[in-house]
Image (cartoon, rainbow, N blue to C red; front, side):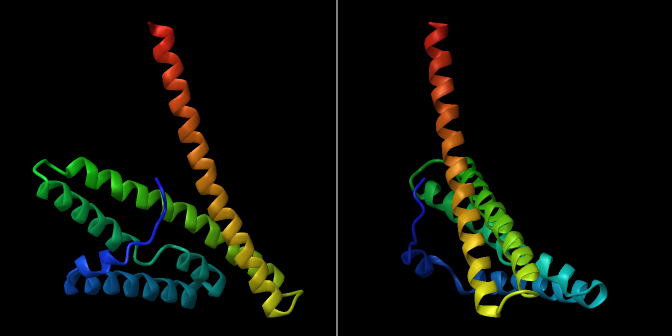
Length: 155
């Protein structure tokens, strides 16, 4: 799968879908704020690493992919689930990157100027997220090669 930005998808969304995303994102942010008030900013900050709009985006992605396939005359349930699953994998990889960003920033703010701490944390996030995606792609390719080899051996 090639990661790309599709601006045309913004025109396909209905106004109430934006409201759903806003409400989910706001609720998760408020929840993280309440946790920060009770347990401190370090704990609250970790919960902000959860992609705030993920719950809404996963359901909307599934719905849009299913509808797209149904317009072409077939059931799109499986395709919708697959697309939402890929979004979940990306969100998980991004969250790991954000957690490492937070830990690196938290530690380095004590010893370095803010611009250095944030630049380093951003670099850590980028390397982690892109690296996780590349590892996933390599594992998928390795799995495909093994299945092909197994089929040849069965013949």
